[in-house]
Length: 215
Image (cartoon, rainbow, N blue to C red; front, side, top):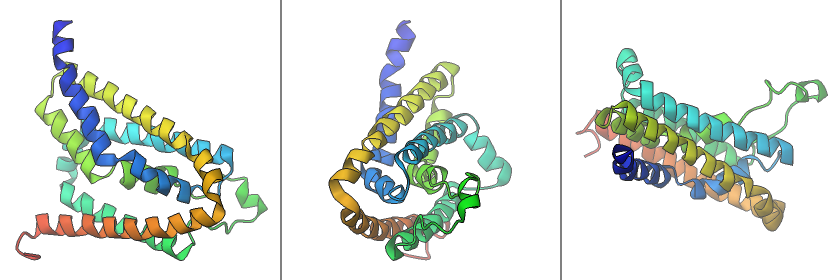
């Protein structure tokens, strides 16, 4: 019991670190923009999907991340570049106003597998559980690799996912407050910011892989 109480500050630091890296409050406008075309039920489903996906991705990183990267010979920097390219692609759709554009007929609308699911990509990956959060989780798991610490980190990840879910539940009120015009403006502004973020991912990854290239 004393050991658990002693390790609580470590788990709390991990939780705060995830919040600082992911910044779900800052992602809230992106969530609103990406789900503005959805019904309330669909938006809640997207919220649940994103939150669960973040938890699953971070749990997988906690227990298997380092081994998986070594098996496939993938570096965090390579993952950062791939995530950056994906973010830039999504950002271009946001700026052009084509994100979430409904191009399905009535039959396709009944098939949820066909409709794009922004809950997993790009909300959960790479915007929320991105290279920073994944690499941080892997670092913590390798530094504190006892089952006690891993259990504490697992609970911290669950609480983090729950916090994200609660924040995104506030999206409908913000949608009503902003209106369609406000959402369109935010969509394009966030698209521009996301493009800058994606380019930053790419540049950071290239700098790490090729230290002398961008110096």
